[in-house]
Amino acid sequence: MSYKLGIIGAGKIGEALLSGAFAKGLFSPEEVILSVRTESHRQDLESRYKTAATLDNRLVAANSDIILLTVKPKAIVDIVNAVADCLKPGTLIVSAAAGVSLDVIESRVPGFVAVVRAMPSLAMLVGEGMTVVSPGKNVSAEQLGAAMKLFGSVGRAMQLDEQHMDAVTGLSGSGPAYVYIIIESLADGGVKMGLPRDAAIQLAAQTVLGAAKTVLSTGEHPAKLKDQVTTPAGVTIDGIMELEEGGLRVTLIKSVVKATERARQLLHK
Ligand SMILES: NC(=O)c1ccc[n+]([C@@H]2O[C@H](COP(=O)([O-])OP(=O)(O)OC[C@H]3O[C@@H](n4cnc5c(N)ncnc54)[C@H](OP(=O)(O)O)[C@@H]3O)[C@@H](O)[C@H]2O)c1
Image (cartoon, rainbow, N blue to C red; front, top):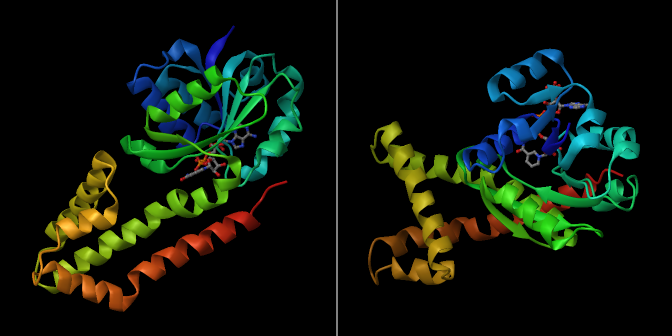
């Protein structure tokens, strides 16, 4: 019995990743094993994905090339301690648990096990996740490539040093919530000016999507793109003046700072 991918804690994040990896043909159901805590959830996963599914984390740990840890942060230490002695050489552990450092896991598993820390986002569900990946001490280029490919199957994956993880959590981890508020507020503006609510939300969301795609696909600095759509003495510059007066820039900067500081406090030892 051997699996290419084992997911310990196949909840929202684990499932989103699994669906994306299947959709991209990275794995077939026979190559995957999942574990959860409750029998009803196990049965549900088994019937929906046709993969092996178990309540036994050691079965996953002993038989998977890549082990994805997507349990809640507070459960990580107990689970890693419980499976450490059955890990085999060459195993790659990928932990998506927020605030759990590489050292917490590396110090509990044998030296021949490689560990990668990842900070994903739930936009993986629509194939637009942003995942930052930090390799630990023993990670080979091939293993890092496998982790990048896995998260790349559900959006973008970027490698950064672990020291940046708290800022990543404060920006791309918490960022979807900020952007939902921006979309809602733009739509409110449209509603205030008489647009039907549904139309206003669609206009606002597609505007954000289009602007984001333009930044990513052109690689241009956002300020340059803003200048391109701001006609002298036109309409947009009046809107920008209101944004500046309302302090949108500094508010967004401060929200990332605060969330980063909060992420720093949440460290799970
Ligand atoms: N959600 C996000 O947007 C997000 C973003 C970035 C990072 N993360 C990280 O991703 C991780 C998972 O988050 P999530 O939102 O996917 O949580 P979730 O939906 O609650 O999934 C966690 C899963 O772990 C299972 N589980 C609990 N205890 C277990 C055990 N002892 N052995 C095996 N499985 C166990 C649960 O199974 P049962 O259902 O059977 O209880 C559940 O399905 C967290 O560490 C979080 O920090 C989440």
